[in-house]
Length: 141
Image 1 (tube, rainbow, N blue to C red):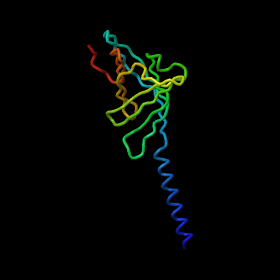
Image 2: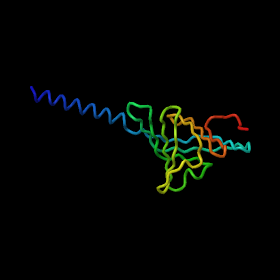
Image 3: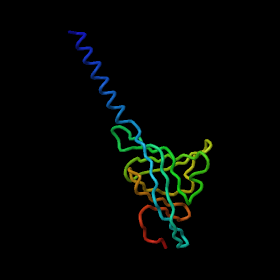
Image 4: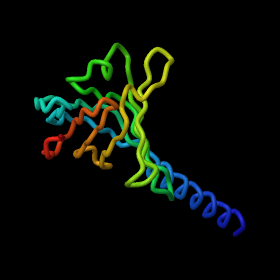
């Protein structure tokens, strides 16, 4: 009887651990997004954003982290060599982006980002005022 109870408890613990593992597993994301670049000189041109990596959600929190390629075609610094990006969602309204290349980490001139958790809607503001967005924006003045 005691062996049977121990066996049931062990099986229960294994099931719980398996469920936690499944919930913590990174979700692969691969997509190519069309975007528009708005410069401070009122220039507008098209670009694309290539995303290839995975998102991992933290259990019992709003936090999530994307790690992988985040290449903006019109922004060469985002895809030099083995450059990888890490995007973190602290909440739906608080995000950060860091690029890693050759052991160095940088925001690469990015001042602010707004990226939804599905990574379908992206808006990036650079320090020079340039905006890259997957949504049609009012032309900055």
